[in-house]
Length: 478
Image (cartoon, rainbow, N blue to C red; front, side):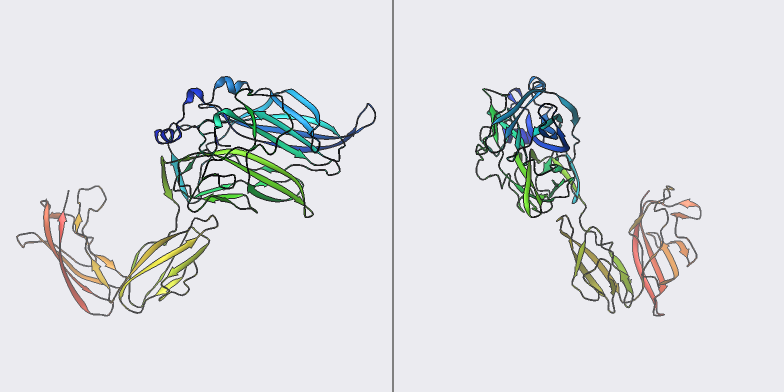
């Protein structure tokens, strides 16, 4: 169900697509709602009423406007589910709504921006049927040609159409079909994890299961909009190797659908347009009641930028031996820190590290999320033997309120400044400050000092009561 005719040179070169001959059918599905029973006024026949909804997805960017216009009205046929006997044919089912499907590409693993233009219309055609009681059930079907000519995983797509249908179970079973919850994503990106919720809801509370299945042919370029006939369920599309109904496109990890949740996951590894068909089984009391199918297309694009939401291990930290530091991991549902050295618990998001000795300790966060977006991040803890002061290597006293003052900064919380002196290259002292002074502003006796390298000297008291002296240089930049 993906109509996303991207104007992307990279995709077009792979798909050999010519918009002038493009077909427009991207996908479709048929669902129904049970409206209750009634008795016909002619003969007192028991009737079961159903509201049947046919949805067709159209490529409104590159699809032929004439072909799109010819979708309306839709043709529907109602058949005995066992014998195939025609019950009713309708050639005047006009669409009730036409909705522009939202762009709808997102990844819980990050924010994705794909270049190119897309346009997908969902046309919904609704027909209410009053069907006589039938121990076989009914099939309601629609056929339309043609699919997008650029589909990469099936043979001759531009000259073959599709059959969309639903099965209404025997009228001894009152049933509402399941309904897929989400629009299909219009673009997915190569080498970016795909997590697409293709699950459904069911008004009857039936248990649902999911899987990939083969798409059905129907209609052709010789008869693009036939009056429907009973579907030939054996006439499935011809998948091109290495693709199949169960492997509609490739990925690493492989593309798969969770049979319980309907979640489609994997990381696509080839660009192109791929036909995908998903079934949803409805189970009641352990028995299969109904199956609906959705046909759509995924376009895998290589023109994407990806900003991962991946694991976050928190900022690097400098502390003094004997102190503790809290860790703060975010972005997942389970966490493991390695190594476990000095951590209160390596298997939680927020352990506390207590470091008795000096050294540099690098920890790797291994994160798992409920959307398979696994990853790693690192955090460095620098542990000093004693408290120290640090002086930046450059400052810019230009009055912009940023980095205007040169002053010692503490590494650890327990160092006490005694004096801070700055000298020019001639050895003349241009600043002499103490613990209460704000720092050097780049002036000496009210005169702005020249750009260049200056030398500093610090006297401070560490956390153990000892006095320490540091020397270094700094560049004044305006």
